[in-house]
Image (cartoon, rainbow, N blue to C red; front, top):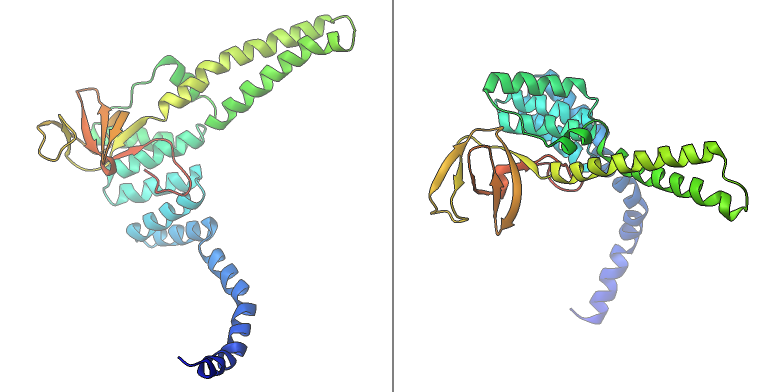
Length: 263
């Protein structure tokens, strides 16, 4: 293209380009609004009421991908259950309880689904059971706050050159006890995050991380397992029956992550 032609091309498109730049923020804001978690949730709820469970599940999944929320995960599980996808439903309800252990509806749904599908719940160690008493983010705040309170109550009187009062000693002792009790819960959060659930029907549990490997057993959708390590596109898991390898997309982990597909 010649220089003169280039100049005519730029001149012809200068005004439309300027208008486009002025309108771009409006279009971007509209696009962001259309893809917001609340808008996607409403779309999912509308589709669910219309018995369009596939569209409802997709909308709920997109919503929790942008912003994980216990209520949305519960509704995602309901939609997946209506689609007869037991593994995806159980995973969504478990993730709902991960974010909010006070979500009694999700807990009741899990009990009903496991009784209906004859599935077992994951076995939890005592410190993992403690970690389910409160939302997972609370334990870090409790541990940090109680530790600083104990240190403050123990050190502040000395720094101020004052005699340590009885109530300060009692507060420091109580804060230290809360901190020590929160440590097992924090460890339980870390180990519980490795719990996952089979998503597909007859998921093969392989002896080695290869497609041609011997199949040790087959997992039903919703069967619990613990993630041990990964190799390529395979993960090594431990179930109540055996230890073996499955493909990564055949196992959904309890801990939901923003910005990534849930499960």
